[in-house]
Length: 188
Image (tube, rainbow, N blue to C red):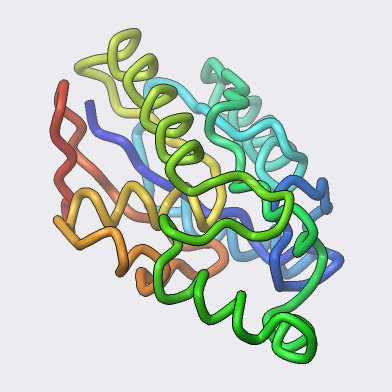
């Protein structure tokens, strides 16, 4: 399966740890996503996180391209617990040590009341396995979040777990993966 990963664009409430917050896209966010897919495809189907910053664009694009769309909860962003809605700059004031632990070892440190990265990884990889089983041989556009893309790109690049958060994924970024039963490979 060829899997094109598209990160949502800029959101109305800005950056920081958005996680499960259901922010809408800004005009710029819509433009970032449209620009990313101009020369993309062709795709056989679209799959999206159900959060509106992904799903609204995916619904519109699926309608324009007359393609089936599935909303997949397993491909939502990591839940950041008490850090949701806060920026790294804000967290440096009262959670500097904890934020440093998270950046240095996201698998070893979970934000307070948040989802463990190990559980997030399992959730995302289970959803990817279901997607592959149902659509092997197809080209799929997945509209999702930075954390999901970092996880999949880090695995495709063979990076150690500690380097997960070093993978850069801009708003509106589009990356292509070749997905096999137990292997991911990035296609440039």
